[in-house]
Amino acid sequence: MWPSDWPTPARAIATTIESAVIAAQAADESEFTTAVTDLAALPAYQVGSVLSTMVRELLEIAHPDGLTGDDIRTVLDAVVRRSITWLPTLDPATVVSILTGALGVDDPDEPDRPRTNPQPAAILLIDHLATRARVPAQRIVEHAVAEIARAETVEMP
Image (cartoon, rainbow, N blue to C red; front, side, top):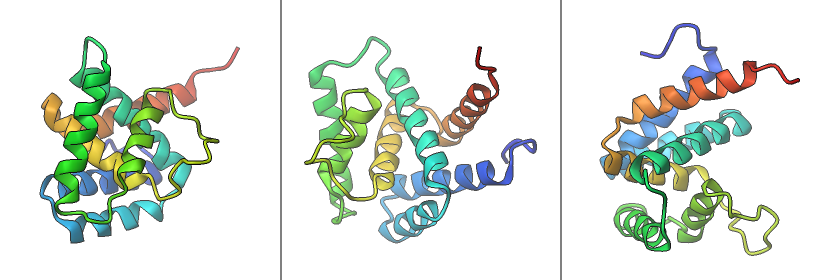
């Protein structure tokens, strides 16, 4: 399924993210909770890198002409409205934090920043944006992991 040259942690992260996105697409709270629990057990920095790369890439694909304030509001509204019906524990502020972080306007030292696990909100954004952009989640996971690997192998001057 994933490239055989990927290290085991990369394959585990990719598989778990894909499972979480599939559960989100199906609005299956139990499977989603299991997948994000499994995701939380993986290396947080690496998972965060893959998720943030995916969100940024999907934002670019879904909004090739850039995002307006209305676009941002529409994305947030769509993610929260759809997800809250099957995931009542969703913290909308975390969705806002993930989206603004992907746009580079989030302050990680903000005292009002949500202290909940950001991974579920990132998965919900990925689900929405992948659906909107008509891009299979597997393709975006694969591209994100490859992009991170490429960036890590570029020699620093």
